[in-house]
Length: 242
Ligand SMILES: *[C@@H]1O[C@H](CO)[C@@H](O)[C@H](O)[C@H]1NC(C)=O
Image (tube, rainbow, N blue to C red; front, side):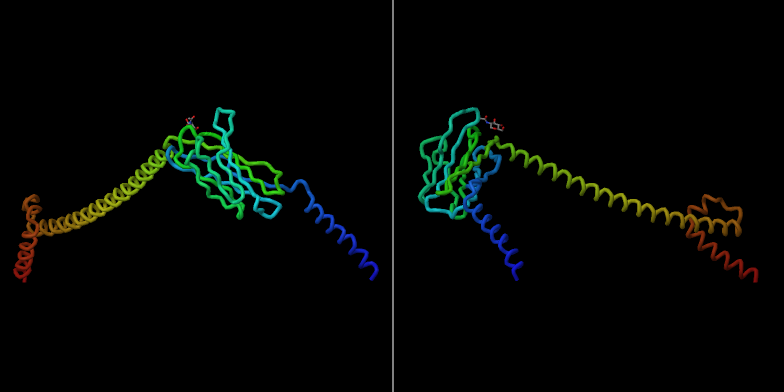
């Protein structure tokens, strides 16, 4: 009994240490996640996703801020801010009337949509989240590249390639069928000719046996008649013989 309690004590101690480490650890802070890179085409929109994880409950004082830094520029602009349950969309700067708030901080989502993209929008967007008292943590950034309808053209090219490939397959199938059909027909014709020739030969043989002097060409030209007549001849010959 004594040994059992003594083995339990370190276990409880360990649990206490883990619990205190979880509560007071300075490594536990807010974590923000975005994509690394997003692509868009001129005139279209792009979804800039931002999610986060906090060791604290989501408080009413949670705030989300988006910054923008154009490529080849050192300036950084605050383009969006959410705090005290209110979204503040910048309505004077570069993204004037082009930003839509689609986040839901209670579900750890701070995403925005940028509408009507322009070539000059290439740049870095940074998402920053503070969840007091959990305010320590790194922000996350996403790089936006705007293309000149390139992906649309690429899609069209892909469609044409797929269409051409399908057409080729159908063409080959039809060709194969036609070749097979012709071959079969030829085969039947050859067979018929062969059997006809065979019959002709037999007939010629029988004819030459009966009346050896007739021209072979004539007998070949009028096979059926000569066949019948030879039958008659044969019949009469038989009767004569009788
Ligand atoms: C934005 O980036 C794309 C892709 O790299 C490029 O084609 C385009 O020219 C850039 N726009 C500007 C204004 O530099």
